[in-house]
Length: 84
Image 1 (cartoon, rainbow, N blue to C red):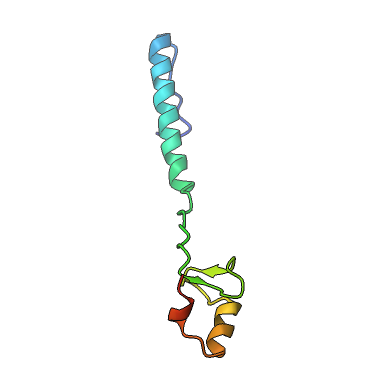
Image 2: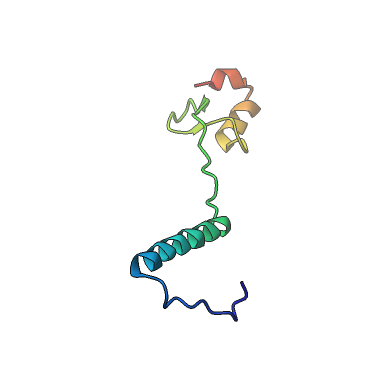
């Protein structure tokens, strides 16, 4: 329906208007939801590797390798030896 047309609501009863208002609110919420899709929640992987020099430093094996992991590999450690 074009916005220029008006609906005559004077013939509706209060309960009918309330039901209509509820339906309109639900439809508006659906339309907003299309534009406000939440970002997906990225679950962090559980740590697979642990820094032997500092056990608080861990890495899940995803993404860029942390500095301590690269350094351990450069020093001849095997990834399996750093497994959690």
